[in-house]
Length: 208
Image 1 (cartoon, one colour):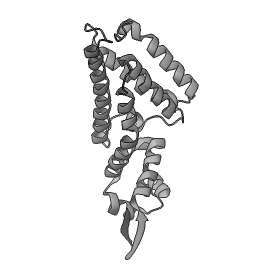
Image 2: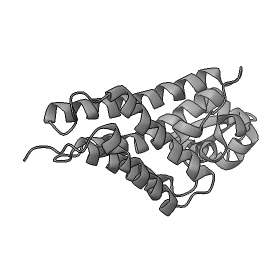
Image 3: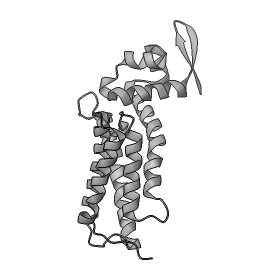
Image 4: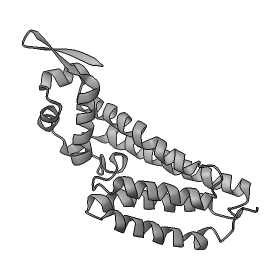
């Protein structure tokens, strides 16, 4: 989609989708608070008036960039959790390994690292990101409940606690990646997390 923004009385055309993707890359690298308007306009190849004309403000730009990111990354998590003919354990492991591969580029996840501290300036963004993380945890809970109904997760399992544990591992992979962990190291974390499954859930497999 091409957007026309006025610059000193003259219209300037740019590809809105392309500059939005460039803004997303800046937010991935620097987070919401660390990305200045100067950083964003330089990466996007537009000036500040054009940014405000096209997106309204930095927060609105971030939300659009976040939606772009989630629309690309979110389905991967859902797809891994809902693979056919896979136990709940297999689905959770697939989700974590997909994340380890994706985060292995050293940038982590925008939903996790976009705004790690709540401030007066980012409070709305902070809460939005927290809600999105909670939605992922809810997906894990639903998959575990499906496992109970299918017989590969014991009915006595503390679903909420197990889901919180694996959501914490998922989020932690992002932080480890940002701190420099290699893909191999992230996969090692997943190995450890899955070794904890039997202690948390039990070595129950789905009946043939």
